[in-house]
Image (cartoon, rainbow, N blue to C red; front, top):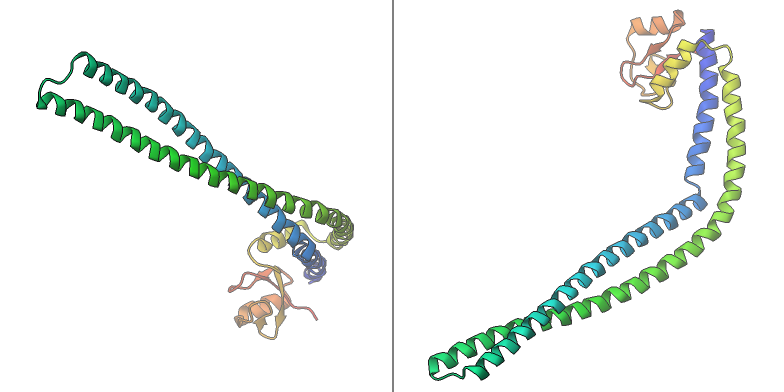
Length: 236
């Protein structure tokens, strides 16, 4: 029973450290700092997406410029053919007109797409300015919060070190197999130990079989609750 009693005291120190770490992680200053950090990261992602969109638009504009050059050449070639070989009948005239309309339709299509690209580029430019403005504001706030957080972190680290030292002191004299079992159970349920409460597990409040109760009270060995898996200890 002495080992389990010592292990119970060890758990008190261990849980005190766990509570402190949890409180520190959820401190108001830390939460604000993480919020700003996440916001800045989101703005960086937005900036990368805008830059990727702009790169795609730039490639498309270059392709359309090449198409304009090609269509202008085709138009000049058509005009030259019409001058060299004027239409002699309605059929030839319709053929020339069909080619011309096809070229004009393509030119109109690319002009419309170019106008849309220009409009989209303007939108992206405005978005980029807004992202830079928001990110700069968040970064300034982050830097200011970080000053206070650094002080808070230093104080928390010192206190946590004291708690860890207390845990180490409480571990002295406990058999390695008990500590090992404690750590294994802690991976699945916290706290890993519970007091016997009458004939119930103090962790999950479920009734324990008489044979298990007897083993807990007289054996001094590690007995786990069949329901929650906690190590049961019978101490005042």
